[in-house]
Length: 152
Length: 454
Ligand SMILES: Cc1cc2nc3c(=O)[nH]c(=O)nc-3n(C[C@H](O)[C@H](O)[C@H](O)COP(=O)(O)O)c2cc1C
Ligand code: SF4
Ligand code: FES
Image (cartoon, rainbow over all chains, first blue to last red; front, side, top):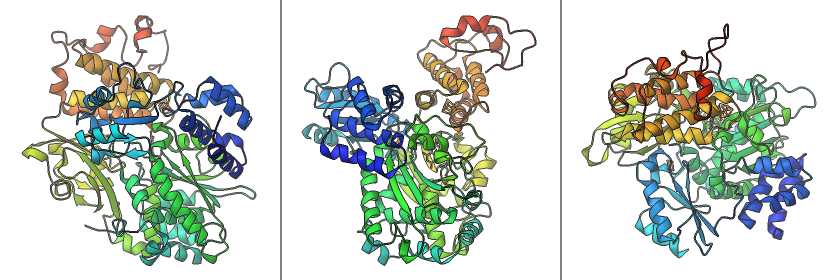
């Protein structure tokens, strides 16, 4: 299910600690990155890997916003709707961006390339309206940034 | 402007160990390692350093609470979750001067006798974690961190952990739970983390800026720090300012610096010649100030407290005269409703209710008494929750309504200014609210029940 690199990352975290429970958060992150979702299949997989019950894995998985049960696009674009960015019209920008990337229903483009999500403050408020593409901060989300995102 | 903390933050190559060391990185750690643990704690105590994560608790005192019994492990957790809206100072500190943060972590660990430290970063800071990770392996390879730090007999392992998107992971016991691979449900205190923390062992949780400041204090001495700032607020503070200002960004200011001067000079004033309407001085969890209230204040703990607000995280958000306060408040209330972890009822239900009532007011579907209802829901949350998020969610609601009341009253249908309890059919502090249980709430309170139920 995972690449060698992903597995190594989980194993490294696990080896450092006394309990494999500790590696759960890292495992969820790695699986989300590689599989773009943590659905029922992934939950059973992680449970087997760490020797935990699937119920525990699912309980933790559903607590965190970045772990999703439906697949995200190849690239996740986060548009900040925190108070500073909201006052700079970020919700409208998210709508524009969705149109621009061809997203009609839901938040993922039909070709599966992009997901656009409105998120709470991402800690980049001096670049409001702030945004991220995967792990990169790309704010302020002006027209130029929108083109950059589309070309990724 | 002082540059006690940020002296080298803009230097090119500061992320590289060789450059950082040339500029004096790890000198504070070197000095600390020649002292006893107690001496380091005493020096930090003497510096007057207070926690920069929000609450402002004296750092030296927090460290002095750690008394490990034989066989117990002690942990230092560096809180780099930074999710308080309007706050982005730790982001810059870690991204541009990672060695300063690592040095602070090492000093904190030494002072409390921890051989294992974690830096818990919010999930969005993966790129920052990569920068820190590189710095960490450079410093470990050079023998500065790791086993026998700087040639001493102090061993330290530092690990990084990324979160996965939840504001509550910044609350210290939520952070501990998350680090243990659990839902970040905060823990009831006591027992406090100093006794019963990570893996039930004695634990200290400190903010990034707190630890970085400790590193500089150990390098320069406590006296250099107390020379800066005011009596109750020593040293300097990072302010991350955003919103209606010309130059949003991070500024280091000496405690006691006048707020209006900061706004005009550092932040560059308000664009388009607009007037100031309000300032949230320390992240959305602290009460807002009107322009008049803000005018005489200085940036320090005691001045903010005298005006009924807090310095908090130093996440300053500026609103100009064009801001529609009810809309701004709804957005803030939605944040807390979304981020409430759901563990305790007053916060889980109350934050949802506050957002819900605000939303209906703004949709033109408000009911008479809605403003009183909002305030009362707030009263029923405050002081009745497991962690500080509940209290935090009330501060914006109460302060916005009190200070910008006409804007809110304009949304409330006129004509019936009965006390809200008559409209909703139950006395103050006796009801449960919420769309699904509204009918139930109309039933009479049980004879002899306490005067609050939530
Ligand atoms: C809901 C909530 C969120 C918090 N988020 C953070 C945070 O993101 N970063 C932080 O340093 N402290 C945060 N805190 C404060 C921590 O609980 C804790 O007081 C702090 O990390 C202690 O460090 P200090 O003494 O160095 O300030 C939060 C508190 C609450 C109640
Ligand atoms: S106050 Fe809110 S966030 Fe804190 S434990 Fe209770 S429900 Fe969770
Ligand atoms: S409010 Fe958008 S990054 Fe902070």
